[in-house]
Image 1 (cartoon, rainbow, N blue to C red):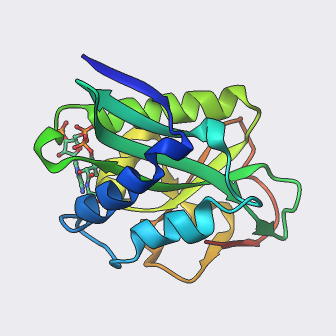
Image 2: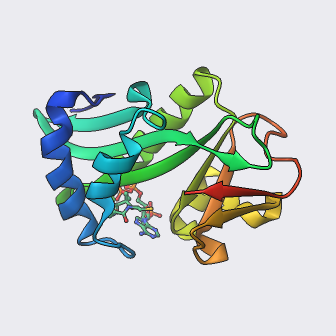
Length: 169
Ligand SMILES: CC(C)(COP(=O)(O)OP(=O)(O)OC[C@H]1O[C@@H](n2cnc3c(N)ncnc32)[C@H](O)[C@@H]1OP(=O)(O)O)[C@@H](O)C(=O)NCCC(=O)NCCS
């Protein structure tokens, strides 16, 4: 049976290796994902421990997701999150684990009052959860990623309407 719980500091070392290995087989990867998580996303101005989850099966980590604070220049009041990373152990892919983690994290984010989520990822995957191009909402990101991979989702109706703004990934 698969269970989901928030990550804890006791998971950090294992997650570093887990993320590294999961992204070695990703469609797109920089090779720096695990360090970005440890050195940037878990820093105190960005980290939200209650929105970082592991999926477990028989006590083993088989998936991980994090939502962290994201500043939006030009829409300072928008409660925006970055979704990064989402990863599933290679032998457990295409069995719904990624979808389970994503739906769980989005539901918890909504409950905690966050209004929108941004990410850099494949629209063929994230489109099914309602993500669409952020430039359709007047949002652009730095550093730039191909426009079709720069995606956003409103957790609250109308949350993404507003003046042109820049997201700093
Ligand atoms: C992307 C990832 C998280 C998906 O997790 P998963 O548990 O395999 O996904 P699910 O089982 O919930 O969903 C599977 C569906 O998504 C599709 N899918 C999976 N990965 C995809 C991808 N990279 N691009 C497009 N579609 C993808 C599958 O075709 C499948 O579709 P189907 O149900 O119509 O057959 C996983 O493949 C992974 O960890 N990849 C490496 C890390 C990565 O790339 N993360 C995303 C960074 S933005």
